[in-house]
Amino acid sequence: MTQHSIREFVTENFGKNYYPVYHGRSNIVAPLVLIVKRKRKWWKRPFGKAEMILLASLENYMENNAKKFFHDVFQTKIQKENKSLVKTEVTEVGSNFEMLIEGFDSGEVALKTSDTPGDLELGNLTEEYFLDPDLRELLSVAPLNPDKMKPLEGHHLILVTGVIYSTKFVLSGPRKHQTTVSGNVHAPSKMAAFLDKNLWIKGQVTNTKVFPSMVNRNSRAPFLFKFCRVVYDRENKKLCISDGEFVGKTMRGEAPKQPDYEEAMMHLEMEENLTHDPITLTDEDCERVENIKELLRTEKSGSQRKNLLQVYLHRFEKILTEEITQLSLESDRPLTRSDSEFLLKLGIRARPRQRFLRVTPTARITIQDYGILFELLSGLPEDQWKEFEATIDDSKGKDS
Image (tube, rainbow, N blue to C red; front, side):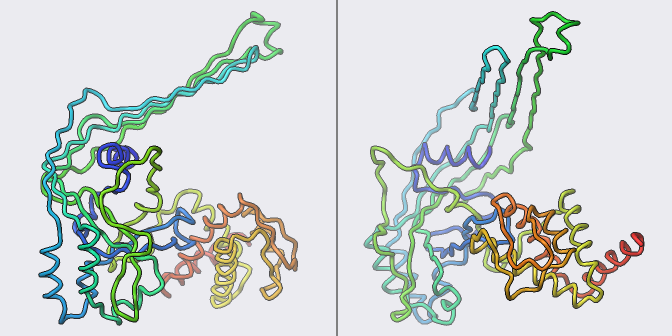
């Protein structure tokens, strides 16, 4: 079952304020777990999206002498509720989409897509959650350690306020996506002399993707969670629920808004695992690396090459984070002929010694693709950097 299908299942059955917990993250999701939300780094794909990082239970950020009292109050305030829900058995789960574009006498094109996401089976459900006044009272008796909270000051903080657990998570049935494109056009005029003038040329292409089996679970673990935004009161050393935020059951309105899952379910990571996303080089990436080598080859020493990497990293970061369409180079390294040739591969036209770069929306996508590789190369350990440099010099020898 795709993440999109899981989200649709959750929205239909539990409401738009619940968010799914995917496999691999369930060991940390619990009531009063603290989450920090931030914008993704410019060198992380996809660019410009938000990510949420699971940190730890609020108790881990408290003063040690207050933890026992907090734990006792926690047990009296948390609500626990069993949910007796039975899902109707269905013979097929899926969705279909068809579109036909007709061009009168010239021809037509048809597009058909179908998705079979599988059937989700859950076990006994239980929910643990806090009511609004209980949570506010609990936060008032939770003094936080300023040293532990210092790295989180100024960040967008979120607190888990409720969790639904399931004793089972099984995805059964076939899972596949199929796309069919078909069409027909009149035979070209040059062929009409040899063929029937009313002859049509028809074609059809079908692409089918069958998804692998998903991991199933037959033990109790979190399935859904809810949260609210909180702010850190540094003076009183406590968390407070943000103004306008309320914790509780949400009733559907006449026109409920679609939940913004792009903001809510980006990336849930353990605090100790906050490292760069692993980068798998594609064939296109390998071609980009060769273009970078060609640029670096114009510099003779390793220190000059590293400086050139930093120059481009600075340019890329400014273009992507400040969303500018023209980058000034007045205080930057003057452009050379090799710079102009390299920038052209990124979709940027520039002459040697030009003092600005014009950036199109299309070029921004390519800039991030190259920026990720520049970031990767700039962070190489010294031994790996020397190995990379050797490939530059080897290529230089072959070219000469």
